[in-house]
Image (cartoon, rainbow, N blue to C red):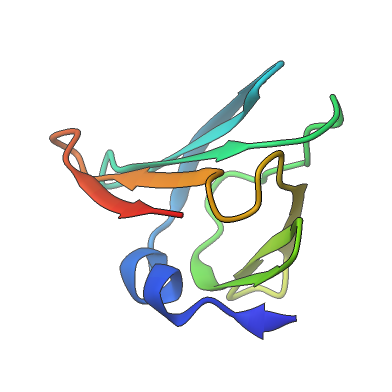
Length: 98
């Protein structure tokens, strides 16, 4: 699976504060109050532990994985590859769309 260098450069080092899931996807809120929203396929929400620090983001087709510094991985199946991930900073400004 290939590392998404653009997304990794934006979210690397951020620490998960909370997460919530609904029928359309998952939102992770980081300690700096920024968020990542992932539109997912299916109803299975991944387990997202609080307090983990992001190391990298990888994608291959509909597979999307956030790798953390403690070797935890958060696995997603994207609903729309290339149009399923958005990152916003603490003010709500877009940092990444893809």
